[in-house]
Image 1 (spheres, rainbow, N blue to C red):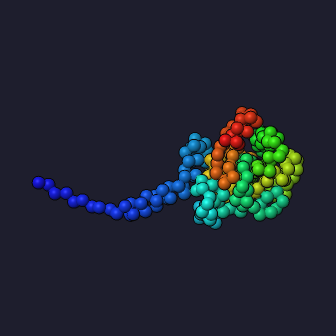
Image 2: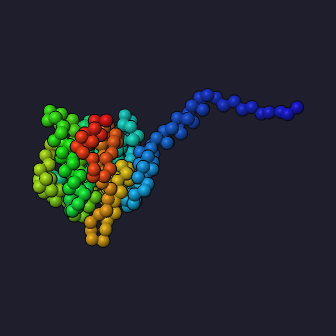
Image 3: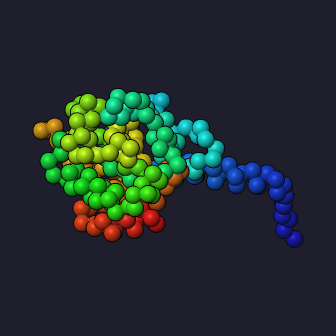
Length: 222
């Protein structure tokens, strides 16, 4: 007759092991999901993962998928220091652009302005439009302030941000935005509008330039 050794593992130890595995998996879910979705597009420059700007779990109430976990510091069009978590509490429409772009970026911003106009005026306080430059060498906060004025972007509703190359690359990687600087100083990049819920979690993304205002409105209100 064969003998068998049976090992009993206490249920409490199994539960602890399961929780540890789930928490470890969830912390990388935002990055992993978007790398898979945009795997066919040229990658952005690699962020310095040893920088002070990698995700920190500083707010236990935030989802592990919230971009507001990023600890990066930016400057807005008035030279004020900003962090992405400062926009928490509103639905955010976000695009990564550069102000010298001769083609796609003006179209993207125009679509965002049309979307803004489609939101009932009394509800605009619940939304914010965020433009983040991928060209920190040229897009100083002074340049972005002039650009906002030229495009009639209301500072109550719109914020333009510029930051370090590492901060830009890190955010781009997390939301699935791909870009590459060309020899002439311009950029090849994704045409992407990202919609965030009040907690900074991506609820939808519009890729390409074909979407109508109604399409974008439906994505925003998903």
